[in-house]
Amino acid sequence: MKIVALVKYVPDAKGDRGFLDDGTVDREGSDGLLSELDEYAVEQSLQLKDEVDDAEVVALTVGPDDAADAIKRSLQMGADAGVHVNDESVHGSDALATSAILAAAVRKIGADLVVCGMSSTDGGMGVVPAMIAERLDWPALTFGAELGLNGQTVTIRRDSDTTSQTVEAELPAVVSVTDQSGEARYPSMKGILAAKKKPVDEWTLDDLDLAGTPVGLDAALTKVTQTTERPPKQAGQVVTDEDGSGAQALADFLSAGKYL
Image (cartoon, rainbow, N blue to C red; front, side, top):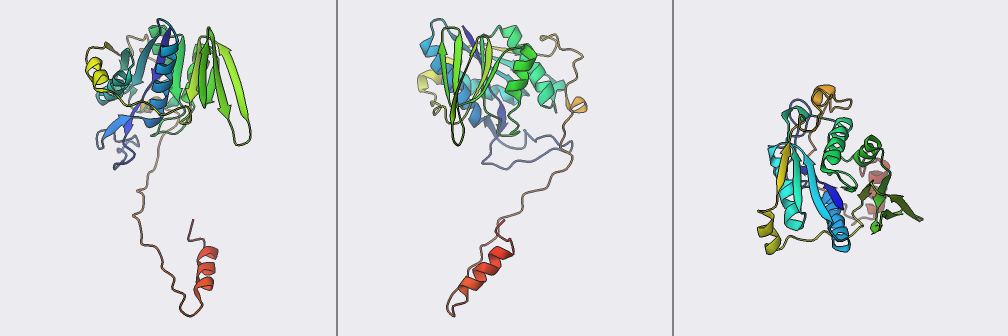
């Protein structure tokens, strides 16, 4: 069985992040890392691998040169191989184009199961897993808090505020898992050393027979047209209550909507 874990290289949310003049994320102006939400996808893929004989986990990413670090981290965690789709024309692609590229890569890899995070920490759309499933004509099981595999049947438990649903489908399928699916493991020293010997393929759109496919910023149907820097933090307001006016001052503050 071949399990593909989708991984994305994103700017570190703890650092300074910005945009380029064309409205795309400035990925070179800040440190990057494997998206935290994608770590759960890798972890669940590895757990399935431990349960299934002859299972292989392939980490797949789309992005510039630095995106190779997302695959590197996945290999250190325990993935068996990596595929990096690296093509300059991909820059600025929206979710539609990204899903087309990923679906073509999944076909080329020959996957039986695709495991995704619930969203990317830099985009936050959460629609790519369903788009990939539609392009592949595979069932999509999304937002799983628990993932299981029994023979050729994959099952997730999807939790809401009031209920839990159990959803299953026959392979091949696309699933996405939430941050409630289980903490991701830390790479061990053995895993870090072993990752250096694992194969990583780098493909272009030509390798995926996607030459001429509408991708990139010019073909994107969704674009960032305006950005505003986050305002600096301001000191809070201290209300003293020496004369009994504190309650009224608090009421005035709340009624003015300054807490929003």
